[in-house]
Length: 271
Image (tube, rainbow, N blue to C red; front, side, top):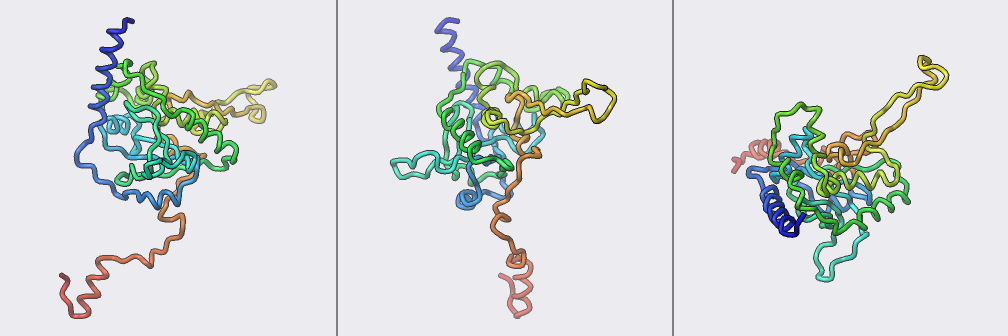
């Protein structure tokens, strides 16, 4: 392919990426994330799921039938403090157009988020997963693979539900291999940590009919088929809620209705 064709495809790809990154109107988070609370609750190796509000986010949420459209890996203090004194980047993610980048927790202070924690992960494997992501900082999207971008302009494609996940893996370029959840899935696969393995029943050599001779093999799927939703559904990841992690006393809550009743009982009009 000539350099002129490559240049035209790259320019078209960047235009499409810019359109897909436009914010959708009317987004209202139910429980916005506080960066300080997230910092206190997160541990290296945790996955932060995000309900995005970009055009590409809407397509991913539809294709995966999920609230979550984006995933980032928390790396703690693995990255240095910026020299300009700005907030330390503690998340590594893959963004459309930007590729693999490090961002601060405050980026998602106005979004609904969920913390997914791998259960029983050893310290060595946790360090290996963090190192895997750090080493891939700077990985870029190949903007010339137009198919990988055009798929997100069809937020409601007329295909059966069972085929929608395959649309996430449509195409054959770097955008597919470097999508946010795919790269994180690769990191966990590098230490043989399961996410959503398929269970395949294999007959034993002695008798295919005997139950004791049958065994289950956990078959890890290709990383391009993983989506942010899978970390939420995985039986191997704990859901961590910051409001509960450090103790919660519902008796301490101040309800607006009770405050109004107290004022009325004291002879004061609510104002």
